Each structure stands twice: as C-alpha cells, then as structure tokens.
Amino acid sequence: MIYDFETTVDRLKQGSRKWMAMRELRPDVREGVVPFSVADSDIPLMPEIREGLKAYLDEAVLGYTSMTDAQYQAVIDWQAKHHQFPVKKEWILTTCGVVAALHYAVQAFSKAGEGVAILTPVYPPFYRAVTLHDRLLVDIPLKEGRDHHFTIDFDGLEEAIKEYRITLLLFCSPHNPVGRVWTKDELTRLASIAEKYGVIIACDEIHNDLIRSGYTHQVLAQLNDWTKEHVLTFTAPSKTFNIAGLQTSVIIIPNEELRRKFEEQMELNACHGANALGLKAMELAYTQGEAWLEGYLTLVERNIQVLGDFLSKKLPKAYMAQMEGTYLAWVNLEAYVEDLDSLMDRLYDEDIFFTDGSTFGEAGRGFVRVNLSATTEELKKVLDRLANCIS
Image (cartoon, rainbow, N blue to C red; front, side, top):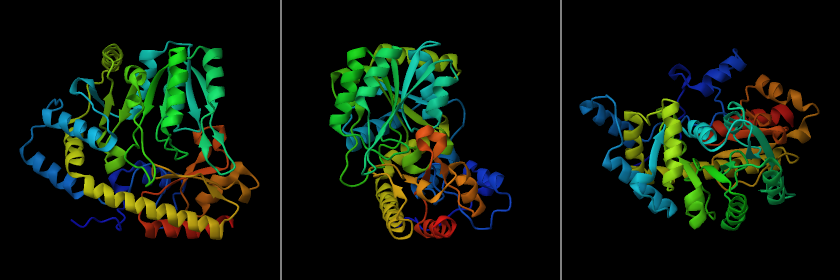
C-alpha cells in the first residue's frame, strides 16, 4: 500500500488543541499556516486504523469494555518483536494516557513532602505530576556537551537522592525534548544508583518506536533483574501511530506488589482503563502498522535532514541538539535574540508556532521544540519564515 505523508489535514474545526492554541495566540494568523508545537501530526490517519475502526463500529456495542485476548497479544507481540521485551499478560494495565500514569505513580510511590526527581529539561507534565500532589520537586539538570549532546549528571543525581531521600524518579526514555536514546551503559549506571538507594523508576517510553537508524532503544525494565522488579514502563501507540486523541496507554509492571499499588491508585482516581475505540485502534496499529511506521520514520528522517541543512546554511549560530530519537527537535536560537523573553512573541508575529523551550524548565530558555512529524513541504515553509524573522 502507498501511504500519504504529503497531505496536511486542517484540524482547526476538528478541535485540535495545537491548531486552536495557534488561533488563541494569534487570532489573525494567515490562512494555511500550520503549527509545529504539540507532539501530534497533521498527516492523514493510517488507513488500516481508519478502515478497521469503521468495520468495528459496524458491529460493536460501545458499552463498558476491557482488553480482549487479541489486544493483550498485540501488545505482547509488538514489545517482543520491536523491543525484545518479553511481556506477560498479567503485567499489563491500561490508562487514559502516560501523563495520568505519571500522576498515579507519584501518588502510589511517594508521600506528601517527599522528594521526587526529574532530569531536566523535560516534558512539562513531569513537573505538574510532582507539584500537584505536594511532593518536593527535585530538578537534576542534564549536562550539555560542546557537541550539543545531552548526558545524565550521575553525580548530581546521586547527591540529590541522598540529600532529599528520594524514593521515586520520573524518567523519560527516549528523552523529550533533547532527543536522546539512552545507551545501555547509561541506563546501567542509572539503575545502579537507583538500586543503591532503593529508588523506584517510572519510565515514560512513549517515543520508543521513533528511533533513528544507528540507535537502539533499550527498555529499562528489561535491562537486568533489578530493573524488572523496580521499573514501571509507560508506553502507548499514540506517538507512533498518531492516535493520542484516543487516550490509550499501556502500563507494564512485572512486580506484583508495585502493580497492586499502582492499580489501587488508579481506583482511587476512578480510572478503569482505556476506552473501547482506543483499545481497538491499538490492536489495529500493533498488528497492521509496521509498513506505515516505516514510511513515517522515513518522513521524520527527511525532516531532520531538512532542518539540519537549514540551520547550517541560514542560521549558523543556531543549533539543534543531537537527535537520536523522537520527532521533536530541540533547537537553540539564543544567538539571534537579545531579549529571550521576547523570543516567542517575535516568532508568533511571523506566524511561527513552535513550543517555547522555557516550558520544559529553566534550562530550556533560548530553545524551541520543533515538531518534525509534519509534511516536508510545510516544514520548508515555516523555516523560510524563521529565516526572515531572526536571521
């Protein structure tokens, strides 16, 4: 089948948060402008999901729904084939999203006033998952090398764990927004520190299928015997297949006691798992989506190259962090901006809608996050506007 990665769907009338936020920021935005902010895509839905849901709706009764054996098997087979992660059926839970799962983990595995660690800059909901529940947010900045390659400050992490008696780490792998695919050696050192101090790790692996050639995603829970018993894996088909609106995430917890505590917290939050359409779409994606994903990764890779070439030729003082995974580019523009506080307004005035790097933490000032899961044609248009805006 030939898949369409060249058509942009105007999602304004579909209630797209990304498109509606663009109009709120700039009501007079020009017709045809596409936002490059929120991490979803404006390309057409994978045909197998669209047609499969149509067929399902011809027969389905949309009552209260649990996972079917076929849906469990779809998750198990995908994790085994793509991530060498042998998952058992009883380890699997579902939630309405990875963000919700972060909140449940904080509630289940820490107490009010206790420290919860995050490695920053990081996806903004990580912050709220800690602070909204009266936990102490312990921010350990990543280290940026001269080659714009971000690494974990292991010494800083260990000192913070000791000082604040941290019992839970919220970890992002692959990392949003800096694009790192953590190596096995890095994860081994991280796990060693966590084991030494008895820290549970809630690991957001939602971008685990979006890996560039030459890199390999290592499931943290699959690393060794200790991680299997002390890591909660949060993943989903939502980024991989662009179905975030169906609010279906997969939570994998091998340790029975941790799984029980997590389920109890789900119950306290009146969460009873994912919805019928989301579960069916997940099954369709994981059983029929390999060819589409291959084309999607080709689109993302082409867009990474286009952005890299643009920066080197048009904005040589700007730079993109070394990108190993996700479709989110972390771009530093501070060399072209005297007043960082004015950066986003300056971009909005030219109909450029990236995500403000400062929303990912103090370390993100001067950065923007650029969503590359767009058509290459639209990417080139926004880059032309960017060159005119700040060059």
